[in-house]
Amino acid sequence: VISNWNFGMTPWIIAMLVAATLVMVIQANRWKGLSVQGPDIPFKTYYAYTALGYFFNNLLPTGFGGDAVKSIAFGKEFHQTSQSVSAVLLARIQGLLAMFLCFFVALPFALNKAEIPLVYTVTMTVALLACMVFILLCLFSDKFPVPRFVTDKLTFIPKLQASLSIYRKYKKQLILSSLDSLWIQLLTLFIAFSYFKAVGVDIDISILVVFTSITTVVSMLPISLNGIGVREGIQVALFTGILGIPASVVLAAGLLGYIPLLFQAAQGAIVLIARKK
Image (cartoon, rainbow, N blue to C red; front, side, top):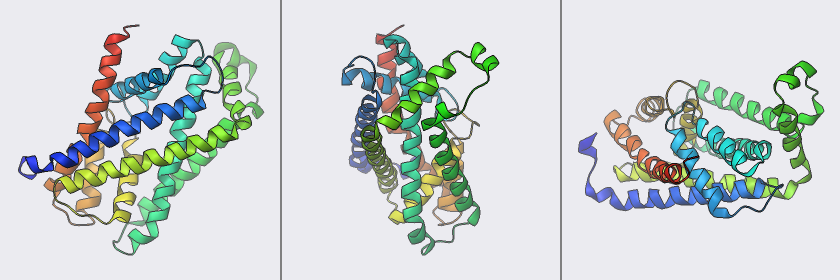
């Protein structure tokens, strides 16, 4: 791995850090746009809690743990937990839908250039359908009555249902947040493109989109902290097993992808120190 790293990759690493910062800015903007109720909270606060989420993502399984921490911490701070959780939940699903959009647009082009096992396409199709069903359940959650004995014990459920269903009245905010999600996905793909270019590997864009999307979905399995190890395993399975790129090169590229993640997490650590509560 070390033999594939050199100082010549510095411009690509800088580009990755710039893209990672833009991702955080857009995520904070998306979160602010989906906060349709409550007080007008400054953008810098949304950015700070977004960074906090990245910090905890590196300590918890699936890559979603940080979302739970930041949304609940934000909600308790500003007394709007149900809306905070709803906004972050919808934003995460929209991000996944943007990823699936890119995947299925790129898939026909990728299939013309590489033999991709059918199991990956089936897995992504099932995951897409699950996301679509889940977001519909969220937006129409108020239409599904919850048994009284459940709401008596989990009193936050009716509040969460109300916060989710209210977005049916805010179609403009949903459209804008969907566009933000698409920009985030494109920047994420650029980061993947950059760390492969940093180790001197040229990969067809359509294949990169398809393989990066598959890697993201598999990494969400609650097997390790933030998908560490799982991510590298699936990258080697795809880029080495299908394209024949040496595993040491693929691993060298993939590990470079932790530089922007650590950069984002470091900002969250600063927020955690500054906001001890």
